[in-house]
Length: 160
Image (cartoon, rainbow, N blue to C red):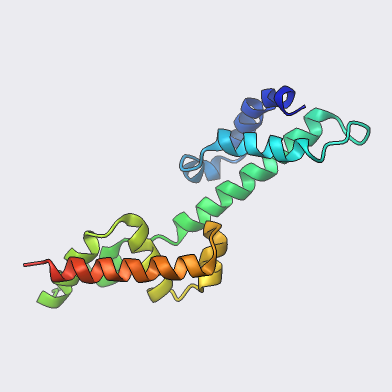
């Protein structure tokens, strides 16, 4: 049943993108085809032919899965703020030597580490919420925050 329903993937994705032009930017960062295929596999386990048509059932499952993944990505994208705006909201302002050193160390981190530290330390997002958004256990998020802080300390100590 799932193999027969794979033909619904491309039309459902095209329809989703056409109906949601405001989500296209976030949709670019999501593997829509994999999300759609996963939705089909999950829906195939609960599909009952006597209750609904395959096009309706699988199309709805794909659409809901696409919304869930793209909206999660949009929330994560919306929380991202550049490091420069955090350290110096007025770019023309004067920075101290310590602030310049911190900015250089932060720039040496990956985008994920910068966003994670910003979310946890500046915006005070809970470990549970970060874990929910990323599909990870809060203890894993706590470990990643500690590792990002260690990498930041290491990067700062290696600066001239």
